[in-house]
Length: 430
Ligand code: GAL
Image (tube, rainbow, N blue to C red; front, side, top):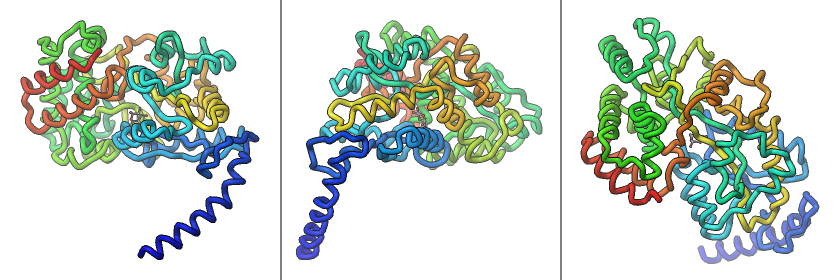
C-alpha cells in the first residue's frame, strides 16, 4: 500500500511539474509569480447553484463570459444544497484557510456586511462601479445592501422574491378555490382542499431553511414590513404578542402540509404542486425557474401565484451577489467576470432562467415572462423587507439558531418554546 502511494505521489509530482509552466504563463497574459498550484489562474466561481432549478442561469452567465473572454479559464465550483446548506461551510473553511474562491455567491445585507466584510476578507469595488458607470444602474436600496461604511463590496446579479405562494391552477379550478390573500382565506381554502383529498400545502424541509422561509413569510404577513424589520434592529422584541400570533399562523399552516415533508427538498416539494398532488407551495421565485425551465410548465396556465397571506404590497427581498475576496491570484479577471455579471446582457442571460428579476433598473423587459414583468413592477412600489432565511436581515449566527429552533418547532409545535428560543437567539443581533 505504502509503495503504491509512493509511486502515485511520484507520478503526481511529475504531472504537477509538467503543468506548472503552462499555468504560470496564464492565458490572460498575467504571471502570478507563485506556482504552488496549477489552478491559480483559473477563475473558480463558487455558489450553490447545481442541478434542477438552480444551475441554468449560472451556466448561461458563464457561457456569456466565455464568449467575451475566451482566454480566461473558468471553473464552476458550485457545491450542492439549497440556500447554501453545504456551500456556506465549505466557503468558510476555504476563507479561513486563505484559499478563497475567485468569487463567491453571497446574499446582500448582513451575510455580506456583518460576515465577510466585517472580517476584513473583501476588497472594495467602488472603482469597478465607477468605471462601469453602475452607481445609478442598481436601485439605491440594493446598493445599500452591498455597502458598508460608504464602500461597495459586491455586485448583485438578481433580486428574488421570497413571499410567493404558488398554486396549481387546475387543482384550484377543480375545487372552486380562489387564490387566498389573507390568512383567513388561506385557511378556508386549505380546509376545502383537505376535505377534497388534496394536500393543501407542499413543504420539503429536509433542509431546514425551507421551514424558516415559510415562517418568515408568516412573520411578514402578520407583522407587516415595518414591524418585521424592527425585529432585527432590536426595536421590536421577539416576545411581542404579534410574533406569537405569527407563530400561531405558522403552526396552523404546518397542519396542512404533506406527511413526508422532512424527506423532501424544495424541488421535491414544488414537484408535488406541479403534479397536482398538492395545491400550494410557499417558496422564493427560484421555484418559477424550476417550474418553467425544468418541468416545462406554463406561466399562468399551469401554475399561478399570489403574495403569501397578508403580504400583498410587500416584497421579501433576496439578492444573490458576487464580490472580490482579498488574496485571490487573479483580481483583474474577477473584475472582468463581475463586469459581465453586472451588465444588462449578463443579467438578462441569468435571470429569465433563474426565475429572479434583474437587479439592474435598465434590463430589457422583453426577456421576461408575465411573472417577471409583474414582479419587476411590484418591486418598484412594494414595501421591501430583507429575508431572514436568506441572509439579508441578520447575521449568520442568528440565522443558524433560528433554523434550529424552527426545525424543533416543526416536530414539537410548541409556540412558547419557539418564542423563548427566538428571544435567546436575538442576543446575536447587533
Ligand atoms: C437562496 C438563493 C437563491 C436560490 C435558493 C435555493 O438562498 O438566494 O438564489 O438558490 O437559495 O437554493
